[in-house]
Length: 354
Image (cartoon, rainbow, N blue to C red; front, side, top):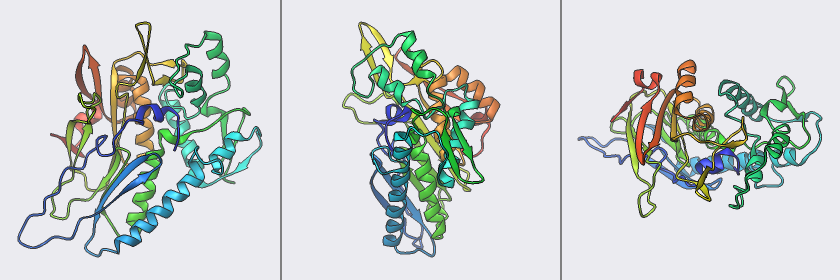
């Protein structure tokens, strides 16, 4: 994936700390099935995958399938590859229909749905705003109102049209660009989970860049435990655990986290967050520093985590209530971290907060 909202939100994430798999201990008299583990580097981040089954297939077969899947995702969605579908789509100034895949159509549909439900706070077309503010080059430029108005008129996920029956998309503005990195980790998790389930694995934890999907239980029958990273790093820069959760629901849940991780510009005493509100074209000014969303579809919960970080805790709680979203917010108030749970998270029986 590449730069967009999530590049600033997640660039400093360390896999395993957006949601950490806690150490597994094998206990009991009879030896349980082996917990297999694979890890690697892809899409600019690390991944860690643990899985087990009574009827296991060779791990090398799983690794090959993972590699093939990651290669296919890159060919379609990597903005670093000039030959990927999304790079060619972005370079083209044509507003004609372009054939695409069902997966690509689905990502656009999810983006448009969450854009509408989040007061415009989710929008994977706003990469040019990061350029305008100088965030990609670390050279701050505070744009004028005229600059923002002119650029915003050319942006918007609502300016992408879909023909789902014929699997086609088109942009209605020639310079419009898409970047799905803000739900890219969730999308990748969904595809890798599909690989595992196709091979007969129903007990696993797929962790990619800090986001994750957890299903089933550990080989010894115990529940999986995961953790949310402290958005404020320790003095030596090492990630810290902020909140541990025990996963009760064995049918499969997702946990996606977006955080500011203390990234901002300081210009003459004025701090500018690296998180931009697509509706205003300006950096956010609220106190929310981390948002974690539980769900069942990692693409959707990933996108919602991004939207929540834009909305802030107050608006985010209201929308989470309307959409029945399980969200764990962390605010920074007077240099202290304050946690807030959405109404749905307070009532959930899918996880237990330790």
